[in-house]
Image 1 (tube, rainbow, N blue to C red):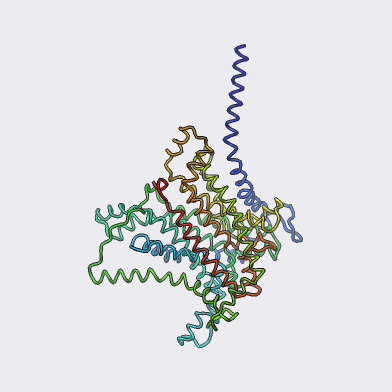
Image 2: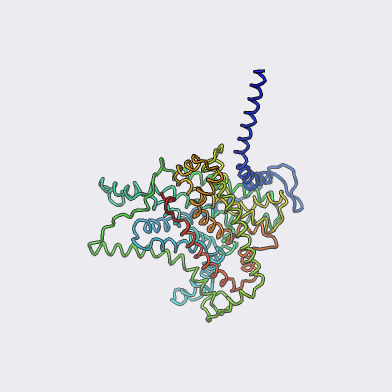
Length: 577
């Protein structure tokens, strides 16, 4: 009887333990499903497809190394790969040489107007990439601003075609687009460095340069690495910019990869090229983060107290300060030149986007209200953005809470894998999603676009919320559980109110990313284009100036979202302690 009782008790304990294990596993199921379907499956399919054959516009399931052999034996592929990587690397380095001093000046030298200085760098990031690139085409074109200026000053007698449709035009545009990415990452890193560390270095006899090289630079290297990686990935995966300002002479590998999934219809070869590009980018990024790695961690944040700055006493010091401020303002002229071009042409009476302007009109703003196709694309973009927002808020917040408070095996690696779509070049991400959605029979159009955008918007929300969760006092959650609160009530009454600002801020940023996305969307939209895709088609087959007007409106709207996001992302009360 004793043996039977012991056996029964053991069975009951085993069942109870299994029930508790299942209850702990249940919240993790969506996490594993997201990883499997939207992250792992697309990349596995990319690898698998690269080893198949193409025939009659389809895929033949016949394993082969033919695609890689063809790629490695092609001098054109090697040339384009080197050109793509070199152009992305060079533009990233030049952009960092501009953005790092700007970020340092804004964080350490500027006394007043820091928020305004940062906001003015962020604003170009929220204006449509297509419109910024198109503005550079207008600036560099034969009848553009640069040629008009050179002719009016007598430097040249007739318009030159040497400024546009070449690798330099692509390089210059990449530099322009990269500056905000690097600035934001570096500014965030420098601002968190405690001022007391620099003061301690000065007290030990270090001059300004010595304090910078031994304190500021080493501690800002991780932020610099993130900015460089984002800039490099953007340039490598962008085939829109080379198409618009590079022409045939500025062709990059991304354009060839995209053509294999479009006109050429050779998906296996395109997958092989995408995989080669992805491997090359991975190697470069691993080297970058290895070189920029800093031992140890920085504890605490130094952004709450401002350093004591000595007033300039001599004329030389005053002149140096004025000169430094003037140099700080120069990159802003570079950043805002295309935006000014967009605004001017939105009121230009001429239909042709060339200088000089012929007169003032509100016709293009009125035309926006009467353009059914444009409004349909706009409504489609907003609908997609809202759907992506809902999915990303629920999934991103839930995953962040799991990583912060749940016991997940390999949590750190799973967190990195979830953010993988953010680190994949846009052209490669679009291809992997097409392969996965084709296998899963997800309809072309809105469903694909929503899921595709969610793959890179959700990590933005997750990382924003997770960063705030890891700064919360863990005693708050422990106290709630000790007082009898369930996990559900603790999350609802304690955690969510404290991270509400991070959720809203991350969601607003993610919404803007979704509405402006074009590279991935081109692979997924089909016959239901979002606004950026519609604009891209207009630029290729018949540009209308009303597009300038709609993007001026979107730019103003994006600035409003940025201000709202900053308000909610500001730590307050117990959340900041």
